[in-house]
Image 1 (cartoon, helix red, strand yellow):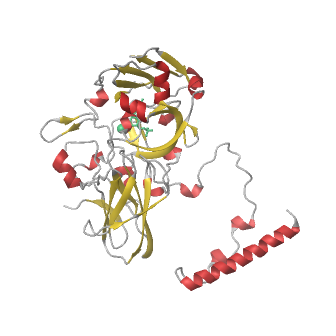
Image 2: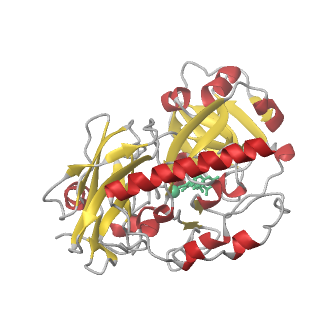
Image 3: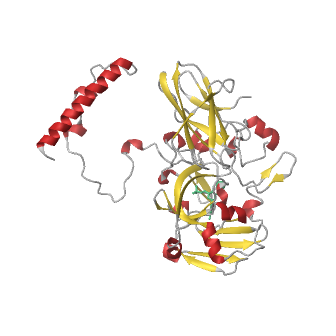
Length: 420
Ligand SMILES: Nc1nc2c(c(=O)[nH]1)N[C@H]1C(S)=C(S)[C@@H](COP(=O)(O)O)O[C@H]1N2
Ligand SMILES: [Mo]
């Protein structure tokens, strides 16, 4: 850079700062400037040279972001191999979940698979049974799509009343990433599905050999076998080297470490669709094949792990999603559902993806009961928890998409409550 360009840049900065100063004093929205050592004193980070380019080959977040971590609920499951940890939704913004913060759910631990040793087989009612290597799959036409994955058990601990104190725990079994892979239809077409085929069985290569039946229409519609998330290879815990992406449907069907697809004419009645992932109703009958995740939303800030710190200007923020399409509208109440206002959706509003919403508000320190209610592109409106219980009883674990209530106290502390 020549001297003259540095000089010009300084002049330009000076001019724009002066401009900003005028704008601020005219608006008078921020605190009046007063002497502050963070402005008047030279700080260490300005006095000394910083570290050189990162010596670690793979970067990590700032050391000041140590709280931004997945967390588990130790009493929830008997062993860490068949367990879950939760996405820190209250620490995130926008719609993409960073790969290292995506919740994990495994039935028999994380399979560590060398992609060179991974195979995908397609068999059953097909013209040509096939076995693919990862190299084969990477030579097929690719697609890129952003989708949410929600475990059917998300909010499952809340059926009998408010229990866990934090949206990380009540709603953190959801993540939203961009997948790269091959559409399942491309692979099935290669094998040639027979005309009497109605169902697919997806099977994982983990110690659980986790498997689920999938209606073939869905398989041919929008499902993907993904090898990448957020631009890089899948993480081991998310199914490296290959996982099923079943947009809008319960997370359990998104078989990780996928090794086999069998084509058949009826469902297989696997453990995961009979004794698990069915919903026991009050009269003793069970709902089965409840694949789709209905519209849902949650206010992530404020929330129990992210209390309100300031009176006056505040940003309420949250997430909404629907397995049936896009989020059309999100309403927010600050008084336990008496009055509602429409939140501002910001960022991409995509099919079967998390959608970010905001309400910019002034807080005078009054107690609040904060709720959010999503409406999707089919016109479906997220129900209250009581409306849901009327239909489903309280035996359920799965598919709790009821409206969440946070009580914000006068000191800003926030708690998981239910309005009776
Ligand atoms: N092979 C295999 N696939 C699996 C599972 C598993 O244990 N084994 N768990 C399922 C469940 S219950 C959920 S909710 C999602 C979780 O995906 P994630 O770990 O990427 O969040 O993966 C599904 N796919
Ligand atoms: Mo799940």
